[in-house]
Image (tube, rainbow, N blue to C red):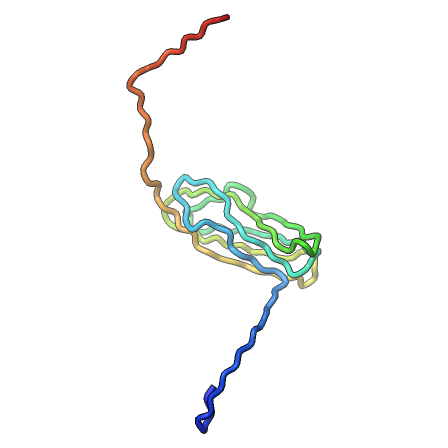
Length: 144
């Protein structure tokens, strides 16, 4: 801070903010066409008990959901206020997809809600291995 008559000063303070419900992404950096994988969020609540409904929306066409788009997680104890929720996806074409996770606490009135949107690029497959046999082998099976 600067004052009118060449007076200077500084200050510092920490402000802790705790939301009743928050989401943290738990997704890969990218996917390759043909990949079948799980992607999700870490759900953090401020207190238990809590019942959180999480919904996934997939936009963009590069990814396809291969399982349910809604899941529920229940927090019963103050000891464990974080849980991961995963959704099954597959990469179907080169491009990118927007993943939107929407969470709401259904148990506590005003318990909180949060949403998270992130882009996940999909890339083409890089090479593959081809195994060719030039000779045939026979298996000698004799009854004993």
